[in-house]
Image (cartoon, rainbow, N blue to C red; front, side, top):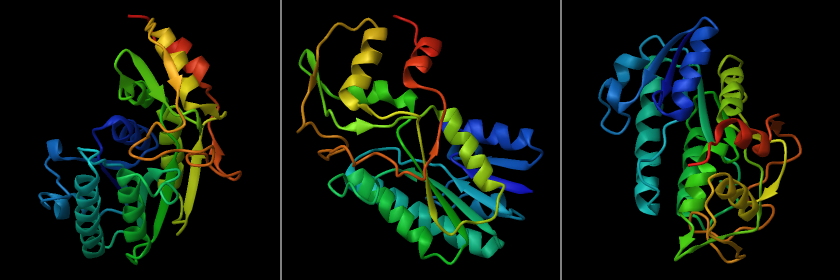
Length: 251
């Protein structure tokens, strides 16, 4: 099977390319640095020639509201047109749990618009919505630095290690199109401020973490349902605490 991974050189994409190759597939890692650009169209038709499946894990280079919307709209339209021309039989996309609920966030509105474009495209599809990756919690925390304290929402999150998201994507890509949206999340729900507190403590960062219900996450105030997957979600096994012990060394 020939599979093209859009965004195939990033955190998720590179792992997915390796896993799909291990499973015996022909896999193209498509990204601007490999000569494939979904915004300009450069190399897109050539990459998709003969492809059975396209997996889109590309992300906007900026989280700015308007720029993210422009990226996902332009990239999505170009990719769908190229898939139709190439006869691609399955479009798989990675999105975010809560994208259709957290309408205050410009970035999540852009992801919701991407999902809607896929659903209306006529190309058989599967959308995997994931919770936040363990690997991104530090970036989220550092983005909440306010003077010499961190201000973060105490709303629940259910983060997951990226390897388990990759495994779910691979299973979906190698299966029949779902023509539906499914979710994946970690094994436990933890308040965002507590996740940051655990990680920063492991980093030996002694600055205080303040729970602030009005602190914004990608532009939105959160509640305990905003970013939590439903009861039918696929669940990862590795806990955040175990991941910290395995992979975070103090500075």
